[in-house]
Length: 278
Ligand code: SF4
Ligand code: SF4
Image (cartoon, rainbow, N blue to C red):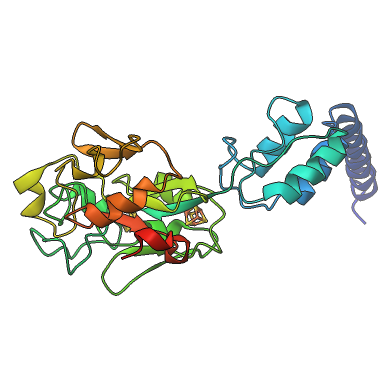
């Protein structure tokens, strides 16, 4: 047997013991203490990591809530149930979830209504298409129809319809807002669920510039803002786009009726007051 064999084994064993003990000591000495409240809060969050709370993810939100720097009602997918569970962990009460919201598609110019200036054959991504000559839609504001919002939705709450427009499945939408931040054209928006009417157009153009590219684009005729249609000014003009000021006003249904370009959208037709229904 090599005379160095035994001393080598002893030396290696000693080194192993030394490094093992050092690592164990360092792990104990430098261990990061995790607040058990953070872990409990993290357990009840939906783990969507959607960022709707304004934090980079569920862990960061759990830490911020436990530290008391943000309120417990910022998790849109969690709703009232999560607010109550977090409040119990923190020993607080009286905080309600923020008003429930839902995503809407503010463009109705699909294949049948909107003109295309060229055939796009690139990557199926609206952000990529936007970079090619400002997109293939003749309307520089309209939905590009490649479904980036649909692909980004973590809750399978959207699909593309046959007309090339995204549709929100409202029952599944948690208002996480990922579709809003994904759309390069600002088409997706979160609105309160109590708001039944919204404008399905974001074009800043007017008259001929709109009519030449889309059959349903708002061309800033201002009819919906006239005293005859909205006497309490439930809708006002902001440059070339009408803005709904009174989200629950019944005057909005008159605007839907009178809009010559049919640019307004009713989310739930069963809620239309009988008098105003067409
Ligand atoms: S539709 Fe938009 S807001 Fe709603 S769950 Fe999907 S990504 Fe979130
Ligand atoms: S709403 Fe925006 S992201 Fe969605 S398909 Fe239209 S352009 Fe693309």
